[in-house]
Length: 335
Image 1 (cartoon, rainbow, N blue to C red):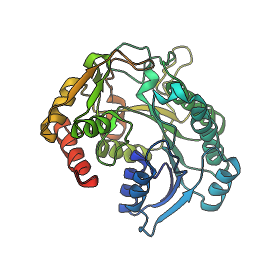
Image 2 (cartoon, helix red, strand yellow):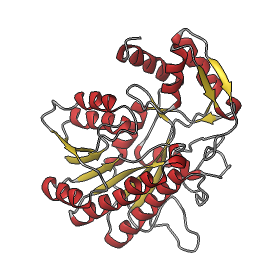
Image 3 (cartoon, rainbow, N blue to C red):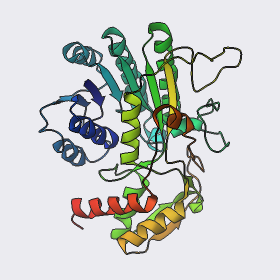
């Protein structure tokens, strides 16, 4: 199978590309290597996959319309996984235009490429952030998600709507995956686990928002990748029971699906920090702060739809996941 993966220098994209290459797929990787965070980390991720004969490495921005058109024409991927995006809730408060360029214009170019090149299935990254002001737990794909609390969340909701349009008009099978707080080795330096680890090792305070009362459905990277691959191999189909009189937000009469992909086991932030302290062998000095604008207090994934359709079973505990991350971090930074 020839699969185009965008964001191959990114956290999830790199792990996914490696798994696909290991099982014998060809991967056309696209990444613009932007400087949102340490480019050297991105280059080191790419070094893990660059020697595979089935890997093609492209430097390209999703917002480059002509460049994306040429990439699709030249390589003719059978399937596409779009994981490239401007990430981060808090950064969207500072640099909103970056989210429009990558997450809206870039995604439009992905959809057009798929449409005009007979792509069999598009799988793309959405986010648990789309649930926004929804307080009904656990979050279900059958819930309404019309009240985002950040521009990042709004851009991901927009992706789901854009994909639905193309599924409806052109019968392009599309599947959106709402990721829930992904963590693990080779992670993003702007995320809590990375920031906490660095600060604790340096004897610096860690910023604990919402006074530590957050609950997050932390999901280990290997479980995420397994879910992405199972979904990629399970092409989206119409729901024959779908009704416009009682519309289901998670399915459609078009070949369109959205799924939560999480651990289905939310963890208190303070418990998460305590587990990290255990494996670092060092206590954190905490600065307790109020809830950040754009953040939600809790996330909790209902993954029953994904279990039913692709037999998704996350099986990495928080203890296992954090231990593996700490081992990687200490080795990578030689602390």
